Image (cartoon, rainbow, N blue to C red; front, side):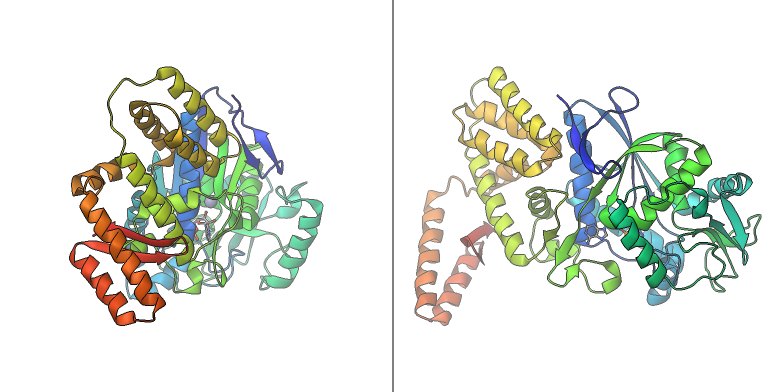
Length: 473
Ligand code: AMP
Ligand code: ZN
């Protein structure tokens, strides 16, 4: 069976062929740890996790490397403004390293909570300064870089095709954008040139700085991903991942400097997932107030429900977040857990049926990572004419990719006694009906009293578009 996904480099859905049979060398851009990761960032990491686990389901062995950006990422991706880490440290009256540690830990806490598997290698940029300096030296030697005003820049005019990911129409739009939007840096020979190494001619108050052949300074943002991937994966990699905002300039610049340094093609497949938007547009850290997975948890949402919400939509489409949409996911997830809790693990697994459904599931995730189809197949299994033992075996099998822990939640539900306590369920249903009637009659005091009555019995109710849902608290 072939494994396909959309390759930004060829601008089409392509069959994946790794360099080494059965093995995948993968790199994913990590977070910039100057603030919490919002649920949009986490969407990107959930879809990458789904890609990795789908590849593993299809039989590949994946090695994944991820960086932590703790230096060099300026407030504009075009090398202008203030270093995001320095701004974060000032905001909180802490050192840059304290900020980096705090937000790296917070990131992984949310990353783990949504069921993601940790990367095989996680490397902070500040660990690799000698590697960055070496790459910059080689780029200078090869004539791809120049020193101006104390900084080192990559000379994009030396490349035949700098806008490697863009069609000719997109290229024109980008050229206009680069010309009009970017604050002028008179050291640059070409507007698209980017910084490889900053020195104090650019910033006076940089907290983190290192000696280099070009003076005391710090690396540009893009160089870290090129060097960290080569340090752990060598001169070639199969799949490079990121959000769509990374395509330009970050990934474009990564390719420019990596291929100039190596003298050959670097990465064959580029996997980009689309953004999570809220009502006001793209969710972004620089906007200030934003939502995190931990905050959702504080509000009573299970982080795995957020994962379920993300997996229900395709990675290449923008996804709109609203509490209403999330509540619908809560209702659907709870229903699933309830149905799983009613399965009885007696009898033998029907291996032929199991194989059949596993093949269907594998086909869905191998088809441009169709996670919503994979979930539909899970529903098909629950409805199917197969015994419960086979259903449970299939749910466990699918969870190697979905990581929704339906079995664990179902066990907890059974232990809490809800799936067997018909009396309580009848009471809840009656209370919900009485409350609906009270609301219809605009008797909100009675409606609230019924809500409290349920709460006293350990039952919390929520109004969603699909009706009232309840859970034990
Ligand atoms: P950052 O910490 O800003 O470097 O971003 C970490 C990852 O999240 C990158 O791969 C970004 O492309 C991605 N990202 C940023 N904003 C969003 C968003 N609103 N939705 C989904 N992914 C995002
Ligand atoms: Zn990167």
